[in-house]
Image (cartoon, rainbow over all chains, first blue to last red; front, top):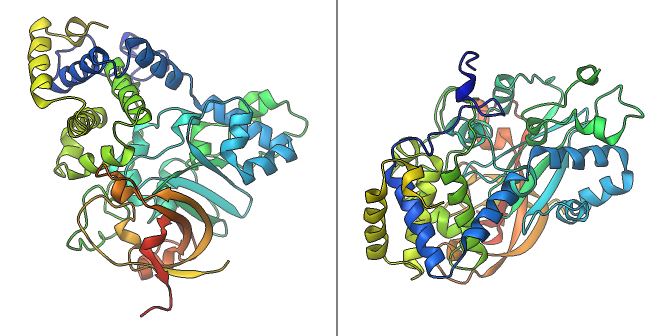
Length: 215
Length: 116
Length: 90
């Protein structure tokens, strides 16, 4: 990550994608054309499109972190989440639309990791849009074959005795990993617990932050 | 990783599980406004029943293998959305082409050419 | 529910949600979901026939043989009913 060109980085620290100030591309012209025609034909409205963008922008990994923190602290919610994760998260107040969600729990013996080898299925209606790596050829190709090597590239090395279960999102279901609650967090508030939960820990490519990180 | 899985006849490029590939590229980017609009158009058009996510995928999968590297994610998506809308009878190829030409006359940047 | 199934080893062209790396492989049904409309029809603007969707668990050894990274690790994938047959079928 460059450190001397802050004007080229967004508030989240990522480079901005070529956008308004770059030469109009063929595909951008197509997007404008399709959007304008759909609005003129009454298929949608500019407000509806803006509303949809806002709704997606408001879906972030923080939503999932709140789900995980509640699962860590409320056994009834944890049971409800395992029974029907779509209903349980919707009842928390998250607008997950028609998404059908399954929550898979990590334990000391089991580590879950999520991939979509056929396209880029991701629990976007809870966590927001997937990171670029999730859609990459490397992640999509290798995760079902050598998950331990993939995990190592994310800085996660698991004992050989820990069973790895890869979930390939091939059809209608989406998956969120409920990471194991870090030791040393007894009595923590849900908010502090949620701060330990990273996006990657809910995809299975990461682990929650260490409790020391919040001290 | 040592070998690629056998490329059986009929095995399609988008079906990547088990294929040979290098390290996972961990760099990320924030989505541009036009990319978010493409995403929104897909959600809205499918919610309104004009086509399905499988229709979106079908056109993506029918693209040549090189499209995965040559086009960006949302470039592929808008191409597929456009084709699905033509197939659904919502848009015609002629009106899309006519409008794109008009848009390209408006200005040199996305900001200048887009009303929004 | 420990039903052993084999994924059909067909390779038709067209839109399919059964990944090639699992075709011809045997696994155990973990749970059954759906019914969901057949995506192979939805993709072509047809009404999808409702199908059961099975989550099938495969071992890495079954999928990758001697090349498996850790043979006892597992992959789970959702496979529509028409792609599955009993594992003891010839």
